[in-house]
Image 1 (cartoon, rainbow, N blue to C red):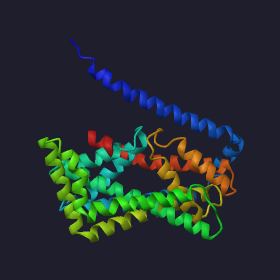
Image 2 (cartoon, rainbow, N blue to C red):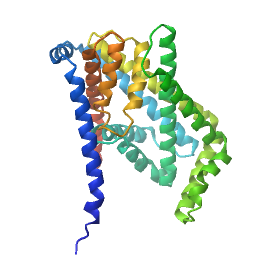
Image 3 (cartoon, helix red, strand yellow):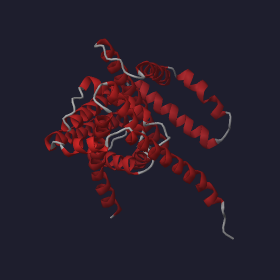
Image 4 (tube, one colour):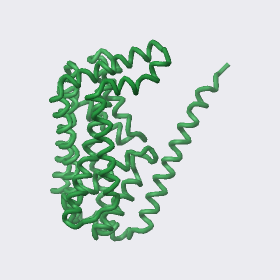
Length: 322
């Protein structure tokens, strides 16, 4: 007798994927409905290859900073992984993030590649989660500072207040986890009440890992600085992408737009932010007086460049298979 439990469990995932795809296509159709396709095509036709190469180089710098940050966090846990191994793993993770309908596929790759050297999947997962938390805080901080700076120059941007509030909330969540172990104990008490040995074992590993991070604050500070650097490079990447299309998007305006777009596309309601990202770019570019076509062009070209770069990770993944 064949069990039907597997197909039943897969139905919600299929339905969720279909809903995400529908929303992405719907948002993209809505954006394009208010866009002159001819103007959009003319913008994309006049792309300047030199600036595209500069944008790809910036994306390479972003990856190098990300790998360095990951290595720093692993080192704080006394986990030694060769730089080449981390670089290859991160590149493969980029490929999964860009070509799978999920933003966590790459994290699974990174955890799998370091769990053996870490001696624990829980420890490898904790490092990746801390890396994610620091990245989110850096993203929101760069956006909040950019919004405040733009406001000082007389540029009012949509959602700036919410961005600043989100940055403060992220800071409020980060600090207790690393400097207030008693608060963490209180947060984990409901999980301990389950009295499951495997849960207790993993919670103990989690607390030990956070304790090692607290014992090496310079590693956390360095990783946070690296996370901020990553976000700044992403801002430069989009400014260079706009420059390749002869669109005058300043680094200051990109510093407000890009963090908002990156934060919005994290919401698990679309396929890798497709449609959401273009909508945000369109709204901001109209506010900046650059036109919705320019926003959609920069968003689409930037996404194409990121996917092109991540194809290298796909090649590495195929070599692994062999």
